[in-house]
Amino acid sequence: MGLLTILKKNRQKEKEIRLLMLGLDNAGKTTILKRINGEDIDTISPTLGFNIMTLEHNGFKMNIWDVGGQKSIRSYWRNYFEQTDGLVWVVDSADRLRLEDCKKELQELLLEERLSGASLLVFANKQDLPGALTDDQIREALDLDSIVTHHWAIVGCSAKTGSHLLQGVDWIVGDIGSRIYLLD
Amino acid sequence: MADISRDFRSVFDVEKQSIENALTGLEKLPKTDIQVAIDSLVQRIHALEKTVTDKISILAPFDARMCIEAIKSMSEQLNQLRTKLIPKQKFSFKSRKTTGASSPAVSSLSSPPSATPKPTAPALDYSQFMRFEDRSGEHLFIGTLPVPSSGTGQEVFMAKDVALTNLTDCTINLVHDIPLGAIHIKNLKHCTLVIPPVSGSILLHDCEGCTLIGACHQSRMHTSSNMNIYLHVTSEPIIEDCTDMRFAPYGQILPAEQLDRLFETAQLSKEKNFYDKVKDFNWLRQQQSPNWRLMEPSEIQPEIAAQLLRNDR
Image (cartoon, rainbow over all chains, first blue to last red; front, top):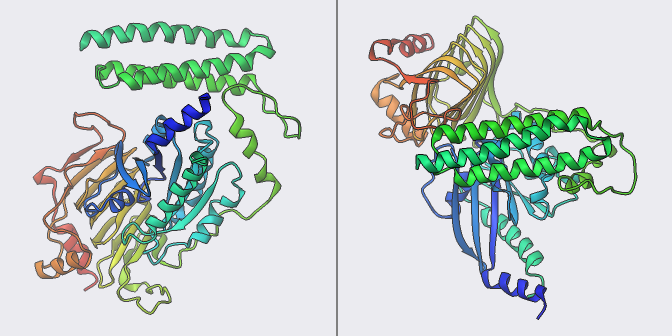
């Protein structure tokens, strides 16, 4: 039995996926997390630190890390990069004033070596708001089409109503699954 | 615990001293060795930082802070030296050099931007905002603004977002029968502002010397100073890079029945109010932050809202 086989077996047994959810403050990261988990979303405070949630999905055990997005704590994001299988980038689609900021932060993340193997899911959140940009407009604003280093997808969603959240999670779990567990 | 913390500090200090020595010696190295030396220093600083992060829960707060600051200063020093000693190379096509640990992902992504000159972000489109900007010394009432149309025929029920930017010495009244969502506030100086209960957040940047009266789900305030804030907020409000912020409860800005109805429309709980649980992102400790405080009862001026609202009845 070769080393590779052992590693593969080991990985299969666990079938664990680590997702890291980042984005500017007020993007709705915690709300997405709580909505997916069916928790109350009315009293969510801005995140000082992080939240973790573990859930089963399509036979995978997902650990989702939701890290606060305030400017002063973004420098701590890198403490969470290690062993990330998927990056979920959450965008407040109605926050036009800070789209440039949002693009810059995302581009910096994509240069990060420790995230180089991760799939990227962009949630264009807050589609329920009347002033929200569509997922296509967000794709253009963040210049996602120029990303060649990562598998990526963008999904317009609303954490408030819950629409399309599962579609996004399905994509990223599927993409990671097909990559890591290719030889199942 | 104090011992563990002290022991850790002495181990930490030895490595720190050694890194600092290496940093000062960096300039004397031959050019060809610099990149390698820098890469190894990056790794050492990272490794040191990791030991601090691992031990952070058992370190005395003072030690933890000193360690974190030392690491930050070393990283900054290293970055400065890096830009000084390794001039940016002009872009050209050539086979990829192995530059050590820190940059394989960089090189594969760095070329596209210049190749395809695309228009960056779509022009800021405020058509969905109700907004006031670049005014001074005026009274501004939201009832005088046109209600933006979203084209769905449901304008009346959809909450509208508001943007207030670059206002000086103004009084602003947002209380009207239009339901409001998020309130984006930027660069207000010496203004007084009354916001009805809204279904979204209040987001505030770069304000000074203002009085703000508002009710919302989330309150996020940044880079502002010397503010009086009368707040009803159903989650913990945050401040970041702010000084001299004074908080008080929202108060009865309208007759009870009318106010209850507004709370209901905005789906805000009237019972929950976290105005006194402010979190300061620049003060991650147990003790009270010096950047905010609650107003003394004698400082609270309930008549401000009433006076401001009276103009627009």
